[in-house]
Image (cartoon, rainbow, N blue to C red; front, side, top):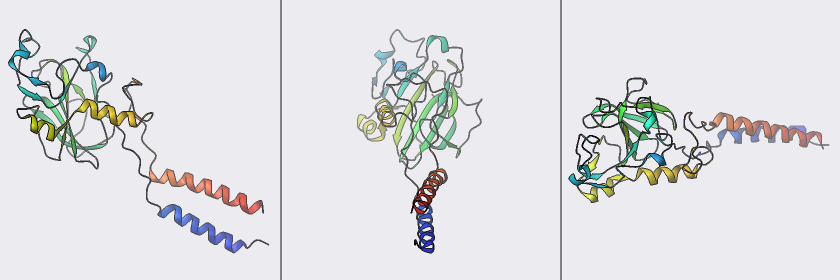
Length: 247
């Protein structure tokens, strides 16, 4: 005859082992800051050397003539978005390090990416319609702002577009251009290559350049430790009692 006390002892040990296991490490989720990310890259790209000649015959489009190596990438609007609200999304889970106005950018958000030595800089934003502030936590795909109107204070007097930069460190750093290419390469990452790599690794949980899925909603939040272990517990109990009653 089977020893019931021994079976119960094994059950208790199994339950304890389930709940003292460390949380499962889930891959960080990443998103693009604007829908149709690849199609918006038509003007200033990462690392592009911007000289006075770049602005010839484009004075109306570029009233402010910044020079140097572009330390980010610009994402342009489509024709029908000029007078529409264009939502901007957090690219990953993190903490707001800065949320305010900066000369040349207008509205700016700096986000410290969780558990990484990286800051995401997003500029030319209207920050008035969304209630966020410094030290607030955001998730990948969360709406964090709208693009500022063309040639307004929110856009820093620039055309309606988004400037996206990703730099190493945890400091507050607002440069949009570097005069030294060595500093550019040591401080900044190419946002296009970086995000495409991260997002393609997370398919199907996040949007990718291949799938062209709309980002009007946030990606699904990964299950937390409680629900993972609850599922483990249910499956274990079912298996355990099946063994007992089948003996």
